Length: 416
Image (tube, rainbow, N blue to C red; front, side, top):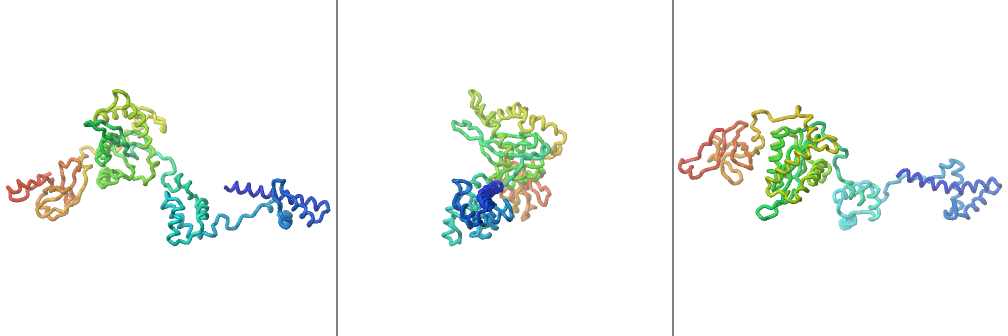
């Protein structure tokens, strides 16, 4: 931009110099300055396609050249160049904030609304010029002017430092005579590009993600960080508890920042082109979810993990194996199933019961009126552990109203 401005200034200065040099030549020939200026004003400069200047204007240029040389012939920039005199600074900041808040609404529509609200504004043309100068015009907004996120490529420094996960639509299966959609949940190690776990499910929900994470942890160890989008399966309390139990730092991408998860998105594309496309071949389709996942696991192990990755230059399996001795695993003998339990806070009722999803469960009567914590797998509900102030207090079990009527009161739950 500055170079273009300098070029324009030089072009103007050269035209002025052509006229000034003519005047100077006439003066040297003995012609008076006024006559020389009059003669110069009769013709265009620098040639017949140029412009005419009045004698008074040429006089200013001539004296400026005599005093300051060629540089003095360049046009002077305005002191307030780039500023909008009809647009105060505060109004300009307000305008930028409004455009940033509503980037998909045309300025003309916003302008009409502001005008109806009585907002004092300059002309619409002035606003267009102001936004273009600030880089907030419609074209810049379409190119992602307001988008934020990582501006440089990055890679985790070592294996299992960072995992990325997401869902992607999978192939349709014919189940019960109907076409049923599947959803692929995939977890990718950022450093090695190894797929730590991946499977198709009938729903892209918390259950699918938690099952995939459980498989990944069992097979590949524990990551230090897990990077996800803002989807509910990744942001709910149960997921937060699981990551806290496993010592995993849970990170979320900013909304509408898809490029920050570009590696996992690229992995989805590779899988769709390399694996899912083969399912369309004759006699190669999957007839059940189990068969589909078996085919997926075979393709990952025999194709994807063994093929050199374009970014790293080595296969994911080789790069992951280079750090096999430094991986972080669950402690031996640890009840890892309990690490995936959700936690609920409940106050025990006077009859020794608590309620979970409209169902009653009995706990030890000694816990009546106390605040307890229930820990359980919400997808199985076969074991509900009761804790009071961090101490295990046995298990809770569904209320048996008929048995209670025979015993004359609440049952005592079995010991842990």
